Image 1 (cartoon, rainbow, N blue to C red):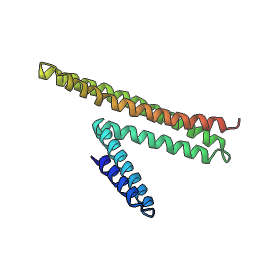
Image 2: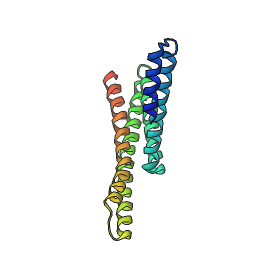
Image 3: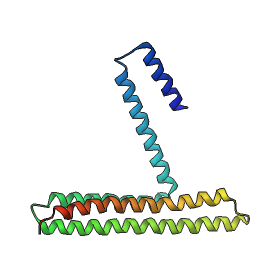
Image 4: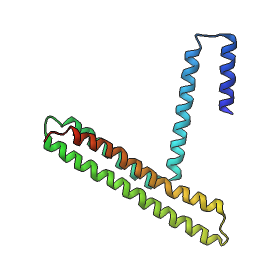
Length: 159
């Protein structure tokens, strides 16, 4: 419905040939897309379980922080940069493991709810699987992002 309204607004702007409002229209579209993306991410975050997703997010933030500190100390103190690489590796691995732990806990919860209902409904089972896989996906995302930064940092590191 939102996109239908945006298309109607676009047609109206083209018909009336309002050139000065086109930049405003483009800005509104960008803001709506950002708002939609923010809502989508927030929805996935809460569906995956706020506790596990928060712990994985903390690991992601720590990994990025350690990588940035490693880049800042690359030329000044190489030993400090190596320590930051090690800490980023550990925090990214922790995020990965927490993601899989959340996935296993989600699967256990899904199977418990199916067992308590007696007759398993495929929709309930599919929803439980989706929720259990969100934490594993976010943990993998954390690991990959940190790993890319670690590889670049190690490539720039002079022996």
